[in-house]
Length: 431
Figure 1: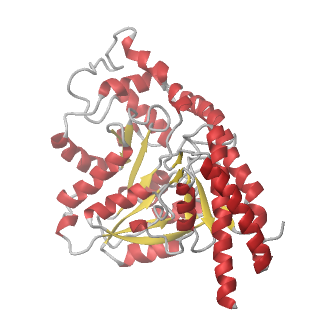
Figure 2: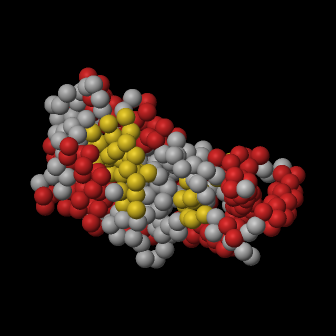
Figure 3: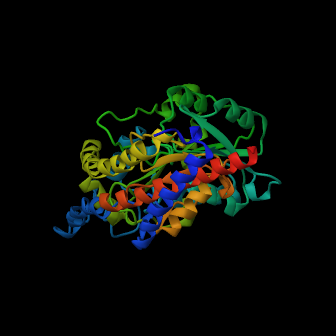
């Protein structure tokens, strides 16, 4: 078939009429399909069910150091849990602070504490005239929502195949003391799936911020979430910072939300000794401690990094066919028409799709009207505003493959219809 851009008005009209018939048939099926969030599927959650027997079967509630997990104490987390995450994140155990079930909650708390109490003795952000955050785009909508809630001004930073535009990052960070942080998903980024290059990681470590309380929020959510046998390598940011004496720049976050149970996993934060002392002093007042029974279950089930990687290989067996179903549909139906581009992630939970400029919202409307729910169009940009109106985050992980195939039929039809409407409008304007 011709590229749509090479078709004349008559050819586009015929193609549009045929597509409308196919779309009407999809609408008549009364579909109710959801590709809106990156949630694990039922079969993935089942993989971790044996964990529930780790403490219930023998009623042994003691940690390796003899502490009883049913009682108070161990504010930083159990020793075995901290060692497990230290191994996964390639940091020292005393750099790990274990939280509840949500790394998003720990990120929120870090911002909240900076707003109300400051960082390591700095002026609380809430007392400052202006606080700004850098936001690589397209990016994670919940990062942006935290900033919006606290009234933090967001500055979009474009990304290329290596990661954020570090020349632009450096310009803002080193010249503007109101810039207090940057959000990063460095491995298998949400939604593009790209992994930051060594050059980009080293550039982050070398930053010399104008604000002493500037922090890199390094959301390492997909550190072991590979979709291939040859995972992307990610340079260790803490090691690079240690080499340059800039360890205090980094707050790192991770969790087992997409490893064990989304609603009952374990989240951690990793930081330098100075940052850790600052955080622990506040945490001592904030809480008596997180759920240590859950920590013990996880530590016994995932006793070391190799066990986690074996478990994630089972996840990969379930997820790879879902990503293949989405990419196959795009390769077959969209790629030959020259009307969009999309990523081919080697890990993570998303595929980033760029439609023709000005078409994303229309695609979202068409999908919704045919029973397919997508991530809100614009969500991958601060304030929900994609200036080009073209990025859509596809989340293949939750629906079964058959439902994904049905959803992608609707999605591809919607992309084609929106593209022809756009091109037809251009032809009419030209005439």
